Image (cartoon, rainbow, N blue to C red; front, side):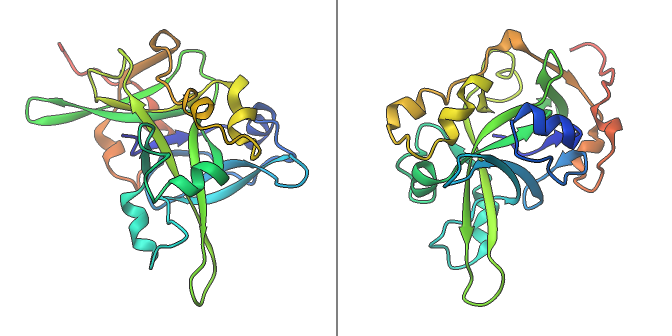
Length: 227
């Protein structure tokens, strides 16, 4: 799964990386957690321009009775995202990019879990394949929410966990965001493990276990002794 990630990238770099119409109002974050606001990139329906917006992490389907269901829908499995009722409408109509600089995963070591930080080797920001939805209560403000799609882990991630978030290649951003593309097989072909040789993982402090800790120091490697 993907349950924590970082986006410490300045807004100006995000605008260039994701071809945004304007720089998003974004403060760097280093420990994004479910139910918090994250940044997503969507394509405008009429002019095809890309824009950034904030969404609550944990997708609330349009038909949900309340927002609490979002806490169980922070991830969508690539294998079932087309058919699962919570995600199938968003897969057809509301695909998005979820920008990130890296993500965290935990490896069980004896009686404890050691967090690892995972990023691209060249350090550039990237995008998870995501879906978003707008839930409208009977009274009150609409809530935009999102989920991150996961797939089987590559050989780098597998010692930590059996699944990993789908990282899209930049060349595929346009296809993923294009509302006119509905061919399921073509879209699902993008939901594959990222090449392990393009990534790196290293142990970090257990401070990341606390979602309230949002310091760039969380990204610093730590020594864990013999593995």
